[in-house]
Structures are given as structure tokens and as C-alpha cells.
Image (cartoon, rainbow, N blue to C red):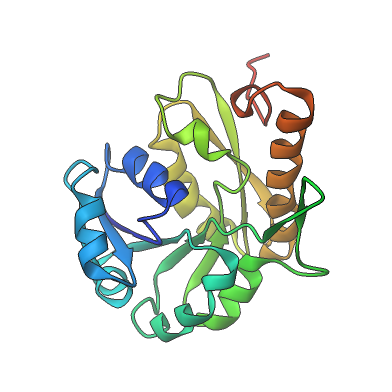
Length: 208
């Protein structure tokens, strides 16, 4: 499967791209195609392109851009029509040394769905700290997925299951994406305030 990671030159985007490249053909998407091609050199078998080129070439599109950089993504509506789009966007801000969720209502994923009305938009990987993805995933971890249909959830779940030790869990329709997105600042704040480290705080799967 061809998976485009829009915002794949960022730290989270690159971390996700590296994990996915073990099972899929990855296309790094950036506003600067030269930067995308350079970043792709560090991802097994990956290529680089601008946002539209990556989106058009892919079967599935993952969006991993800063919340404040989402506005231009509306121009991709035609390129991603009929495709699965997975949002990894977390709208965060730092206030007094504490990460806070910056939206009063809704979620980044719901905003993205409005920008891309012809796509199947879901949210996933939001509850995983970037540092977890930057190394071999050796501990079982639950990935919360919000999507408006179980069929869309299953599409996302199959991608999640392709990464060793990750288990997808259905978090409900996209209206629940805000709940999922709010978990990231909670996890990071817990790690920072308690000195536990991001890899020891989160939704860890445990077999009964």
C-alpha cells in the first residue's frame, strides 16, 4: 500500500513514516518538495514530493502537521477524494509550563473532515508520544481510533496492526476525536511533572 505522510519532514511525521515503511511504500509530503526528498533518504524505500503530489500518488494519506499549519490542506480535497485520511494532529499550546489543548470545542480531525468532505477522515496515533515511535516498539500499546463508521475504523486498524506491538481500539465516531486528541497533553504532562519519561506513561496493552 502507498501511504503519504503529509508533514512527514516533522519529527512525529518522520517517526510514523519510519514505522510504516516496514510494511508499506511511504511518500513524504512537504510544502517544500526538495525538503521532502531529503527527508525521504532517511526512510526505507520512501520518496518525497509536495503535498499534492504525495496525496495524489497515495492510497492512504496521513496528516501530521502542526495545527496552525492545517489551513492549506483544504487545497488537497480533490487529490484525496474517496481516500482514507488519518489525522495525527494535536492542537496543543504551552501555558505556564503545562501543555494545554487549545480548542474550546471540536477537534483537529473534525476540522480536517470539513476541509476534505470527499474523504473518509479518521484520527489515530494521537495518544502516542513521538519518542515511542522513534525506536523499536517493544511494549504492547493501544492506539485509539475515532472514525464515523466501523468500516473506516477497520481500514485504519489494519494499518495499525501492521506495526509490531500496536493494538487498535475503536474510540467511537469522529465526534470523539477531541477526547482522543486531549490525551496527548495529559500523557506528556504526566511524564514531565512526575519524571517518569514518555515511554512509561500511556495506554499500554496488557494481556489478561
